[in-house]
Length: 145
Image (cartoon, rainbow, N blue to C red; front, top):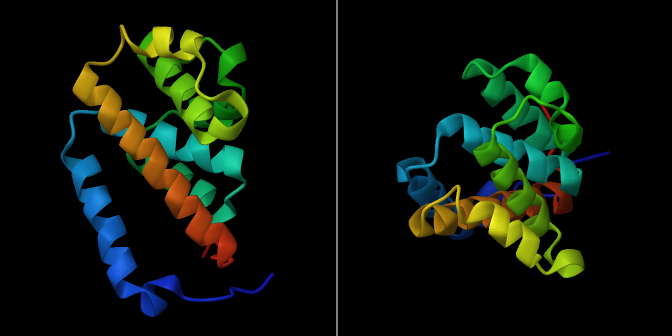
């Protein structure tokens, strides 16, 4: 597979807009390990090799347990994640697969007690942003280094 286009060079203003979203995410109250789990899980669902590689490496560098990363794709069946992380992962999956699930009420009921309203908005921004990055990387065939 060959890269199709360097989207950073071809669309610097679009990338500045994406960077602004990342600045908001960096400033929000969501825990950084949770942010990386969300980024990695959405990237797994979307099949984005570049982003899976990047966010797995970032999570490991930040001290994430390799066992948790290895089982993230099957988080439902493991005891390794907190209730808050499980709620975030369920939200990530539902929002990423919005066309299929329309974010069910059961997932909302799981998220609501774990996150403040502002955190829920930030979590949704995080999911939307990583999904956008996945689409850039997949569409233009950005490859892991």
